[in-house]
Image (cartoon, rainbow, N blue to C red; front, side):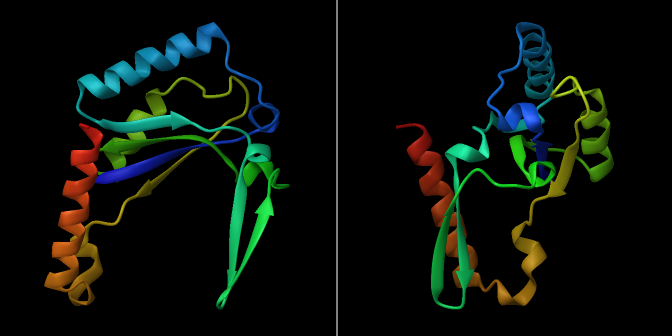
Length: 143
């Protein structure tokens, strides 16, 4: 099962405060454990929302809203994509994580939909398209 683990933002991450060497070292060790265990597929930190934008949809209309965004507790400061046996396995890994901000912080774990989750609506043609796109993405990674 793949899941995405969100590192929630706080006032410091939104202010662009970078982690200190101690936290970077601890996170590096944790990431190394994840990679050695075959769990980590990807992981990145994100710039503050002030450097981002949102595209809002209302029917056929699109509206762009530039950051920063007000609700810091709802924002994401970083993420991992993990390949785990179960949600409990992801929880166990998350509990081993160094505190991402050093203060009050939170990780959110969300399973990623797999092809079989979509049922009959995900037709053989759509599955073939999905597989083709995934293969193309993998090919682009090696170029």
